[in-house]
Length: 288
Image 1 (spheres, rainbow, N blue to C red):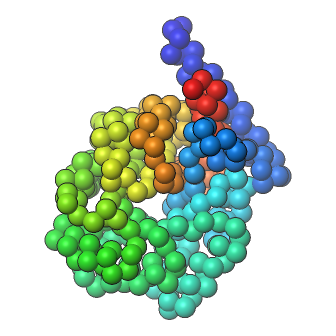
Image 2: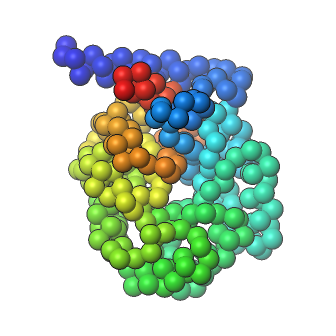
């Protein structure tokens, strides 16, 4: 067995054990998140959750899960923060999340197929107090979206959706349409869809980091369109390389876990994923 293989096996062991500790513990802080490290010289990215992970759970269950995993940030999908209710209700629900001690920094993915949908998205985001919309605007609406970004001071991060997507299959397909635009108009790099497009996520992070506003963090089973979400560390993404790329570019944003597997009971697999990532970051900081 070569050195790289041995290292991968060790990291998987660290992640599985740490993840199991979270899943089996009744304490909300069973895993100490890397962001809790009080050494500014350490690599300590902020992690959150994209609530598509908990699409079959209630908002209350989602909040409890996020806190149990000792995550601090959250983006909500519309099944948890509906877009078809009065804006006053949107604001009240968003405040409920913040009262629980979480940073509700954004929402999405939100599709924008018309000017009316763009208007609705920004009014919704303003009511919720979002700093960021993870969105998929049609190409002909990009100028209109940019005007709204300037008016509302709410950023928009275009989400790549892999080989099946006609609008933004890759990060580069979005990046090329953002040249010379407002810096608040950027990218949500989904590293799973990046890998499914046959592209190494670390390479996209290094190449397009100047527009990177958000990340959906996950692992997938294959580097093709047939790849699907698996527990981080069990798939084909080079997670240590992706994290090293984030450290190299000095990423200051949030990386949100999006665990699309096991929708009825995402906690065990998500806990394993969080544990694996925390284990990798611990080793990175020890070996710096």
